[in-house]
Length: 245
Image (cartoon, rainbow, N blue to C red; front, side):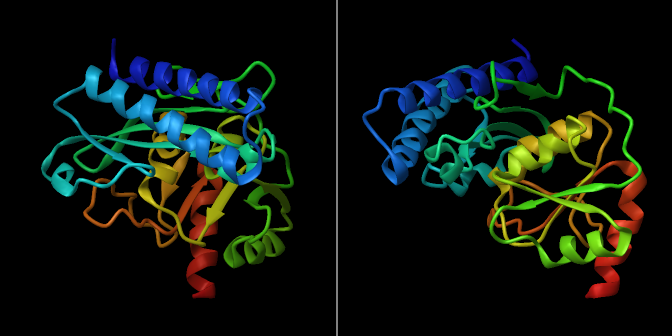
């Protein structure tokens, strides 16, 4: 099984596990989010350890072993990206399974189990980007839209589309539901590794909001901002952020 096939398989199975946990009726609200996180994390960590025992691992829900920093290949996972949305039985949450090689988000899959029938977007199965509308759409946080995104939307006459998890937002660009995801409110490597890998494979622009590359498997996994967008919007978005700084 290739790395991409493994990532997609694990993301899909974790998604099904999470739906089963939610469908059991045993948990609700925050307790449901905690139970889902723990269950999916146990599965992902065990499965990655069994399939790729020589690789490193970084998970949001696992105590970080910084020995991974000396390894070339490190799996970076978020068992439930958008725990609140998962607990609220919304569709805009995701499962992230990414692989960084020498600091680059190289391979991965993002599952969107809450959609009807579920969906897994992956680095080894590419679909062409659909035609973009004349008026761009920017995905933003449901509760705390990034100031830079709001200002850029006003500058270009774009529409804001509130959405839940980081993975759901990033995949909205891949799926042609929006054109720009500009985030500055704080994230960690597990929030973006798999989405960035998938977005890059689909030909999208991915960078920090200062234009520098996204670098993974650092000792401090805090990676606070990112820009994922269609290539035609990248230069203008980055310049807008620089002008507002």
